[in-house]
Every structure is written in C-alpha cells, then in structure tokens.
Amino acid sequence: MDLYDFNRFNQEERKATVMDLGTFIAARLSCGCRMCLYAMGKFFAEVVYLGEEEDNQIILVRAFKSKFCLEPYLELVDLSGIMM
View 1 (cartoon, rainbow, N blue to C red):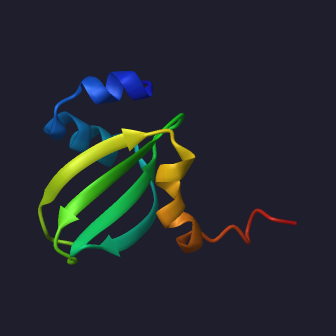
View 2: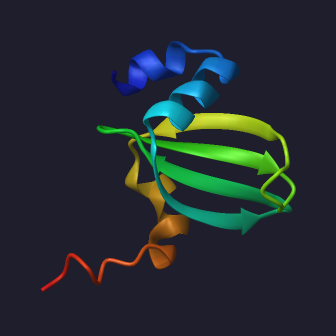
C-alpha cells in the first residue's frame, strides 16, 4: 500500500489500517489533543485523539511523507540504539 491508496480510505478504514499495520513511533500533546505517529512503510500516519487521555476518541487519521510534518516528533524519538 502506498500513500495514495491510504488517502483514498475513509477515516474508519484509515484507523483500522493504522491499528493493523502501523508501527508506533511517538506520541505528543498539542492544543488539547494527543497525536500519535506511526510508520506505515513508505509513509507515516498521524492519529489525532480528542483530549489527552488514551481512551479518548479518534478525530482524525492523516498520512504524509513530508519531513516538515515529522518535525514536531523529532525530539521525542530516541535514536541512540541505532547510532554508533
């Protein structure tokens, strides 16, 4: 699956695909929402939850390849295990 296939899905299909195939990378808080980043192979998916608790409802699932969209997560990812 590529980014374009994923973006053709509705929000429920995107949510199910991320939960089934995504690899969790990091979570952050922004504007009263919890945002979780997942690796999806050749692209990334961001799942946005209303509120800051883990049991809140998903309000958006979006996908991207842009490095700009990754910037808010960079300080949250520990690369020490792969660096020499």
